[in-house]
Every structure is written in structure tokens, then in C-alpha cells.
Length: 74
Image (cartoon, rainbow, N blue to C red; front, top):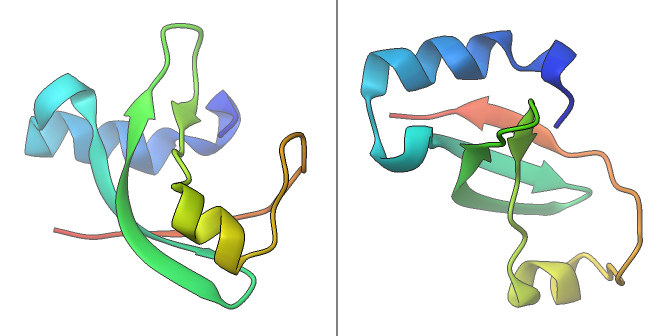
């Protein structure tokens, strides 16, 4: 996730004080929705890990560029 789109995530990470600065989110790619955490990167922005099961359900392959909708939870 690009740095320019991380204002709300950084604020939530500061409030919640979770491990590694992670922030709990509900993520959606197409019609696949799941709950996970995003993690801050030292170079800026956040990383959204996508498990194999989710990649399979969303028909994603290595190198695919995707748009994900994130909703803060907790």
C-alpha cells in the first residue's frame, strides 16, 4: 500500500499498539473477503499479506497487480 494512502492506518497503529505496528483490517479483492493484518514497511507504506487460499479463491498469480479495499477493524 503506498505511503500516500496510509494516514488512517498509521493513526490506528499508534492507538492500538499491536505487535510490529500491525493494523487489523478486513480486506476485499473482487468478491473475496477475509480478515488479516497489514504491516508497516521500513521504506514507507504498508504490506498486505495474501494467503495462498485467498490467492486461489481470487484467481491471482505471482506478479498480478490488484486493488484491495480495506476496512479497519478492532
